[in-house]
Image (cartoon, rainbow, N blue to C red; front, side):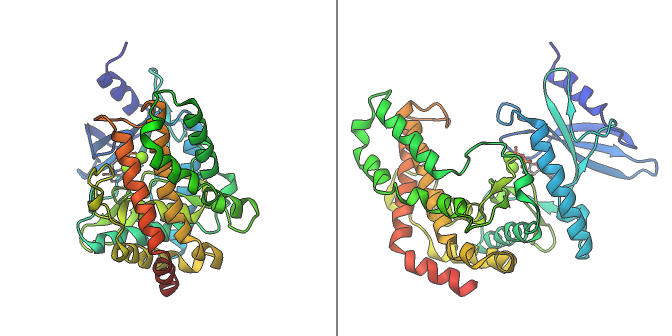
Amino acid sequence: EKTAEQVLQEALTAWDWNALVVGAVRYGAGHINDTFCVYTQTDNGDCVRYILQRINTNTFRDPDALMENISGVTGYLRKIIEKNGGDPMRETMNVIPTREGKSYYADSDGGAWRVYTFVEDTVCLQKVETPEQFYESAYAFGNFQRLLADYPADTLHETIANFHNTVWRYENFEKALAADACGRAKEVQAEIDFVKAHKDDCAVMVNLLKEGRLPLRVTHNDTKLNNILMDKASGKGICVIDLDTVMPGLAANDYGDSIRFGANDCAEDERDLTKVNFSLPLFETYTEGFLAAAGDALTDLEKDTLVWGAKLMTLECGIRFLTDYLEGDHYFKVHREGHNLDRCRTQFKLVSDMESHWDEMKAIVKKHS
Ligand code: ADP
Ligand code: MG
Ligand code: MG
């Protein structure tokens, strides 16, 4: 058995740093991977930092597929950004290959490690404090969509199968309900009815994709504020990070997931539903930023169905919380009794709010298209 420190030291030897490695310390506030900052000193005395990450292989079981996705997308971004006269060292992540020329290093303990250049002079915000920051994150994710508009999305690996297959999520809910493993179904009839009433909705986007009416895009699938690096001086969202969940998917789903958690000012597990309100102003802020960057790259139908992305990502998330509640809380970590049920209720409240504001949402998308 090796200690964590020994494994870290082993991983460090897999790269040719072209400098003296001064040390490696834990870095950032990510919850998925183990992230370190590596400090090096070059011959002329400069300090150059790198991001070293141990990939969470419990969540991502196929590091080859995952790193192929990331290398493909970041390599493509680098070329496009260069062509557009941007700075590819700041506006995209850059994978640094190991001494052996591989995109990651497999350690003797079963771990998988990778190194990225460190994007200096940026901040990574954990929480939206101002609408401008929300706008900047929208612009950055919209720009990601635009830059990758011609990337062959079908060549990406689907590292998590059926991630936003809402029909499949509905079927899983039905199975959990039929099994009712914990005898909880009787307490949550209202939520069950809510899901059943939305059965047809679950198929809307899946069918448009199947019929070839919506294009397959490169999607990020974790479009949170803290996966954007903002320029320290200007506050502009300059670099999209955390590309582990990059997969083929629908543009509206990335957009929709951002709306789901960003266009409200309540906690995902708020128990007092009077505090759970969908915010049209925040919805407009994000929509404006997203479309300002991505608008020209999206088809008319993609833009018309953005509202569906918002509603379905929220519905799907609620369905997953309810399914996990019915199955006995195996998937999402719970910290109190009924935690998943509370989470499911906030999502369904937001879905209902969106339905009440459907026409206004559509008008906002039109206005900024
Ligand atoms: P997780 O999946 O665990 O959230 P991330 O890839 O988002 O992991 O990285 C965790 C944190 O490390 C980020 O929130 C950010 O603060 C920092 N970080 C990651 N990559 C870079 C980079 N290339 N340059 C600067 N900071 C980075
Ligand atoms: Mg992250
Ligand atoms: Mg992540």
